[in-house]
Length: 157
Image 1: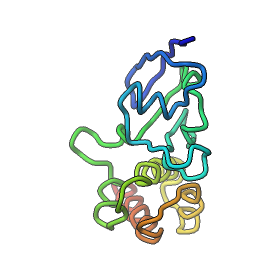
Image 2: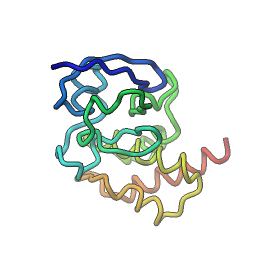
Image 3: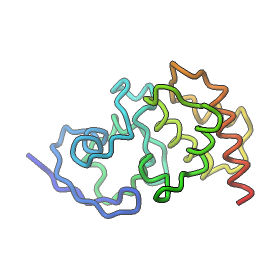
Image 4: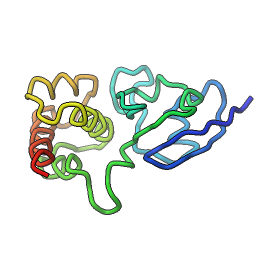
């Protein structure tokens, strides 16, 4: 039986109907067309499906769509301001911190969550915050450098 859910996604009020068993990841991708979050593992181990839910980083494959009722969700689609990329997105490009793109949205969202709570993280803090995200292509140094550079730019702004 479908359930009607009202929520906020990327600062927009959204309503959707979902089945009790559908994950937030399935709702975002299949019902709402927000395909940035990816299903990598389906068990919360890879971080490819990361979103920010009420200010906390979560794996959307582990959250039921119905649990989004009256919640605030941020996805990678909400990071840019129109055609203007978020500093993290710009720095990922500048530092070549992406290749195949499967993990990139999850890393961007995890980095955004980190910098929202800690605008001046150490390298160790960045690596710890991103530890729930797996990448098979780039390694992690370019990603860490991109986050460090974005943090510096965001502090200056």
